[in-house]
Image 1 (cartoon, rainbow, N blue to C red):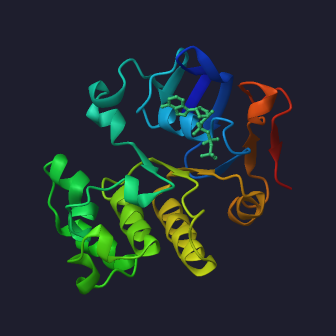
Image 2: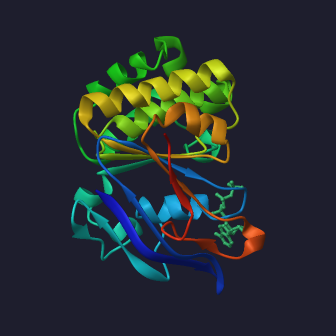
Length: 232
Ligand SMILES: Nc1ncnc2c1ncn2[C@@H]1O[C@H](COP(=O)(O)OP(=O)(O)OP(=O)(O)O)[C@@H](O)[C@H]1O
């Protein structure tokens, strides 16, 4: 289980999350909805161990996180993959698409051959893999980012507005690939979107969808206070 308890996140003393509690069980899709600015990406960054909360705890499979960002233990860090909304801000512009997919393997000093296989499964042709980010479409780049996210076989995948900028067919392809990975690996997926129709389609019956409150209502409130519902 990936779990955050009583999370508070503040930027320069401005609180954007206030005592938020959320669980992402392995093998399931959990939804997170909420309007723009309510703190969804901030919560995603904390759960991916990239941002230290002002208060609260994060636990990964029962182990409480004590170090954050690059100081977080690699064994914990690689258990969680984060897919960002804007792929162009999430990749090194000098890399080819194959470099993008292979980056986590290179950093972890693992064999690189898995990168090509994952890229191929995402429909990225050998020609596309030699191109740099400015030579491909947003959808093609996001496909590379999804392949990259799966290279180290994460136990949890956080998808932060992953398909917001993309057309319906690319959206369906990315969601289908993540669903396939979830089923074969037993990974837990956190699907984050302001688009409740997308969450309806992605999170099946019985799935839990958490809702963060609108920004104007103050810091995002925790589930368990009426902010969570279960799809039926
Ligand atoms: N690094 C930062 N420094 C200062 N303020 C920030 C920072 N990151 C986010 N914020 C502010 O925190 C609030 C929540 O932002 P966040 O990106 O987490 O919301 P969101 O729900 O993901 O929004 P969106 O759906 O528009 O991406 C916003 O008011 C934003 O301006």
